[in-house]
Image 1 (tube, helix red, strand yellow):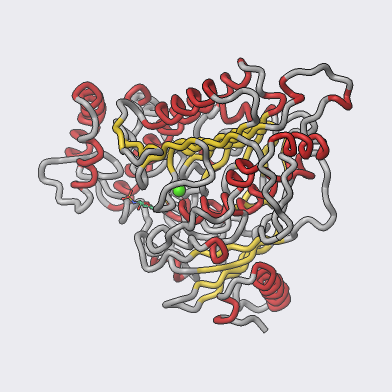
Image 2 (spheres, rainbow, N blue to C red):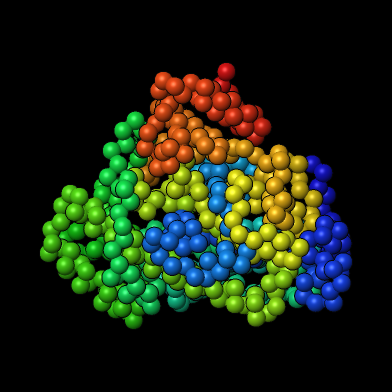
Length: 526
Ligand code: SGN
Ligand code: CA
């Protein structure tokens, strides 16, 4: 590895200036905020999918503040994760390495070695102030941050607990999305203004079980969301899809997920639901119950069954999810306003992304995990500091393993050789490197586990996707994303696709070798 910690702010400033990232001196500009090294504001949500962000998809809801980032900056239209699950995705993002190399393969059995190098730690060692607020979910305490305050595990929407740096756990009053933003803005205000900073704002929103802020409860109640045309998918030719337990019809819980509590209900998730709603104080709870009770009464009287029930559940799911997005969008707006009002936008990279995508009824599902498009994709929009002129859509394929090398590169810090990701800083300058990757690699491990999505790995290029489901199954799937973007028609083994299959196998083999994923020894490709 080339990298040597420099520990000196001046070195970092010199390096940044040398990299041309933020210096305005050469453009004859007078000394001002943008002459300083670049800052990073990295905002990541949980389970926020591109279908529910209007910069990407106008069918469902409006997200004006998130869209401000896209319209004033850049929007990646081919942005993917390496492993569509929270902890693994976070570990890939922090380390720039695929799951097998960073050691955090799944939420259940992994423990993140927080002493391993991460981009916040490299920046900290190079004179940056670093801070993290919100969801961490790597089963130990953060390292590489001057300041952090994280929620235990998945966190609580209401009156949430926060673990503090001194080891104490405190309980705050209010709604989590506001509180994470309050803490972040407070830190930004109190930071040492002579040093560059990197702040990671990690929301729990929009994670299950979609408890909205009481201020947003009434929203979207008049709206009927269009049903995805794959909602009643029969999973023909896709065994792993057929055995997954994430169908809105069969696996979404009426109480826990949809708040349709009833004295006679026997759901095994009732206790979990009650633990969450019991966190509310009496005023919060009264507003919550006043909103949901009439819906419950009508629902329990209606005695819906079969497809009617599934479609009713879909509408309630979409509404609650949309309400939680509304609060998130408002709070991202607060951060953008703060940066604008404090003249920070010229020299700050603002990133908005999610730990993965999510199903909004496509294939009949909620949740994520699969390498199918909705959960492989993740939203990625950025406001760029001076010196990065690109605006609008970026179509090259990027992955969350690229974030670490990109941020280091932009900050003028050498990118360690052992990172799998590649800096996409050239794309932010409007360049189109000829040797940019033509395919991405994916590997999901958490099985057997909740939602029962079988282990799989695969490769996706701009036209085709090849996946191998393994462990207690041995099934390949191949899709032509051009003729079958919804991935309903598994072409693997069908006549006429021998050459495409063989090409994709070779791409898969090459990536498994490049990243040195040990799975290739178990399932060697000729
Ligand atoms: C929880 C959820 C699951 C979800 C996982 C992982 N169940 O276990 O639905 O798939 O988190 O999500 S819940 O009953 O606890 O809500 S992740 O985004 O953190 O990876
Ligand atoms: Ca997640």
